[in-house]
Image 1: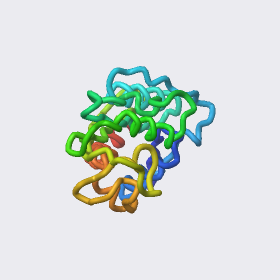
Image 2: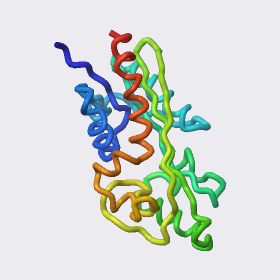
Image 3: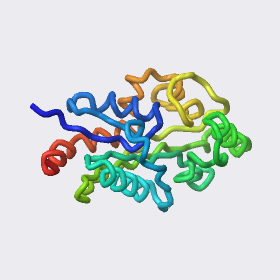
Length: 203
């Protein structure tokens, strides 16, 4: 039986690892943009996470001739009126590292007291076929911004995103546990429900 292929529209190794683990039960061959170095960076100029995810998935499906899955995700902080939002990866400027970004966030949150530090990780995920069919879903994980970074797991803003139900930051949570509660995991679980039929339709 032929193994179905999908391309994850990312070069982020941490994100790719999470998605591969969650999609593993579907038995797909999971490729990424690391397998297609000729594809240029896709400008994420949408106003919402969904717009960016759909744009990336559609472009990569068209360029590779395979079903593509893309996500756009970020951190929305209540006290900052939803910032950094769609600008999460560019929050500290081009070329900034993950620590640069969460340190800037902690500086902005310095005067915000406990109880008012609520935030959400949000993930929009889209699947697109080379013919232009698209499905998209969203996932969300609520938490709080910690006063200082803790933990060495994960990536991005994980060290400063405290999950009250676990009593730990995302960076202190084992990957298996994170893949049950994270915004990306919740979006992927929803996408998994429609993906098998979507892949069949594309054949």
